[in-house]
Length: 351
Image 1 (cartoon, rainbow, N blue to C red):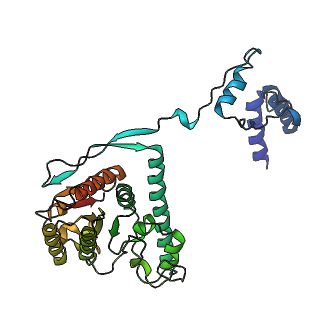
Image 2 (tube, rainbow, N blue to C red):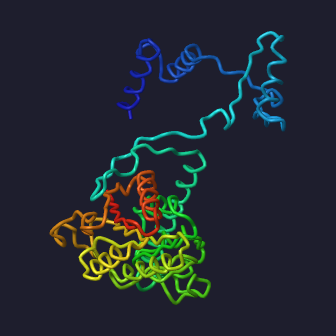
Image 3 (spheres, rainbow, N blue to C red):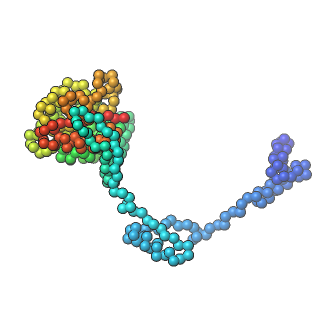
């Protein structure tokens, strides 16, 4: 106890600058309080409630022009200043971006390397990709909680492909894809509520809960298909119907790198080239097919050259503007002359 008192008294003496032998601990504490009062800054005076800072008033209903005029009319007062207000009209309505150049096969020129983007388009693309990402993350959570049973093939990480292709084609054009179909089901007009209800096997699902993850459908959307590569001949058949009816519509047929070695793909390519079908074949290459890397599964990973006699493009599938410009280029290529060189093979590598 004496040792502790000695330590405290020595510390107090060092702070106050007094001798420990002359005063007791209580006297040193009193001296410390006086020392603190002398060295501390004065406390701020209490602010009355009516003088406290209030939140700023909302802008007048007249908009930015009325706000600026109301402030500039008061510049004759001492200390007055002009406050400028900015609205959305002050920003540029569109911008031009440099995009990655596409590798081409059997084409003299590819898509443009500069793309224009308006503010509305940018917000739309971002909203679409963000919605698909959040939907897929929630589906992943529901699957791990065993609320979604059976198969659940997610599309997160590939949102730029869906958003870019949809921005380049018309709503009346046709689209068919493989079993990773949630993103395109949403971009084709099906609500998130119907998609999640279908995944959880409920009656309110887009296929009344009987299709599940791989079998969802909408107008001009022929769904996901569970058999690897089976949707490619079906897409060529849809393109044949468009050609037969002469409606100037096209069909976008999507498949993955895991289906790129299927024999039915090459048969379809041959028939589509012979008949000049208005079909865009899109290989969404996510580098793995059922856990097997493309290098272990394919002797050649240049999938955009697999059509041989079919023109092809290698596109950066992580850039929504690059995908949009390439898909628009492909759609125009297919519609030109309707039966003249109306075929294009796209590759969208991810990562």
